Amino acid sequence: MGTVGLVFNNFSIRNIGNLEKWKPLPVGDGQKLSLRVQANGRAFQNYSVSLTEPWFGGKKPKALSFSFNHSVQRQLDFFNRQDPTREIGSFQITGVTLGLSQRVTFPDDYFSISTALQYQVYNFDQFGRQFGLSFASGRANSLALNTTISRNNIDNPIYPRLGSSISLATSFTPPYASMNPNLNRESPDEERFRWLEYHKWMFDGTFYTPVFGSTKWVLSARTHMGFLGSYGDRIGIIPLERFVLGGDGMNFNNFALGQEIIGLRGYENQAITPGVVGRFDPNSNEPFGGVVYNKHVMELRFLVSPNPSATIFLLGFAEAGNNWGNYADFNPFNLKRSAGVGARIFMPAFGLLGIDWGYGFDSLEEFDPRMTGRSGPQFHFTIGQQFR
Image (cartoon, rainbow, N blue to C red; front, side):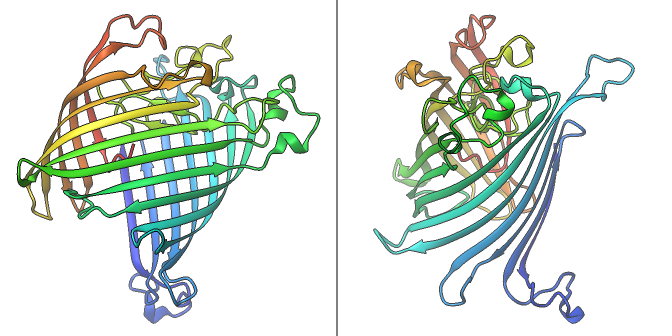
């Protein structure tokens, strides 16, 4: 996996026509331009561009942002000895987002609110059945209003010692089924999911406390929850935007594009996910991904080096979580448990890099009948900050 990113923190749209301001791009207005490319060979690519005006209106720190994103996931014929890179299916997501965020002073000065309107196009080429859709090739659309309310008062973004970070993120699409009386569960999937209808709720809370009378030892407690639903029972919950749990939590593994990727150390990537067995079975119509998940983490961290050019810390963790394909089976006390140790290093040129060794104590037979024993020991590598 390779990632290349460029960030220009003093960009200026107004000075695009002024060649004297190109150093190497037009500068002078404090706008932020971000360019990023991420790739894993032909199997996965992601391209993104974003532009942020941090002082929209000119009076208060109110950020107006626009972003464009294009991702493609390809299924390659690895068993073809003559041409193992031959493409046998692909899935693409193209989207644009217009957002506005600002800090607020109520209930206190640590709160912020962000709102964004997002439009996405999902294109399937011999790939739709892997999400439980009845068609292999086709297209779906999503228009969602995303709102996040957050409170953050941590003392340091790289190695927090004090404070907390709490957020509630919601997504709502228009109720298309209510506006079209001809849509129901018997309608073809091409019609049911031409425009995705859903609402999603995600809660994340993280708390930091120094222990043993030292600022080098920090206890971190985290909890994460997610819920995906529909406005009624006419068309059911959509097969996209679901939760995929297990492993390192990075979003380019094993065809998880179009879903929320949640890590759970001590288990293989995406192993704690309903529909994982039938994903490549052409006779299966079970959606891939859960509609509700819970995850809870405790970490004891020790700061080895506070050097800003190479911040290093060690950690021991215990965590538990689960993922359910329907609300009838939801049981917040039925969790898959794990524990282990890890290390993190932050370097400005590369970001946060990490390695973890985790041991999964539970069986995943309910997701895959072949996995009858404990998950056992697993190594995980991480790139970037893992927020869930």
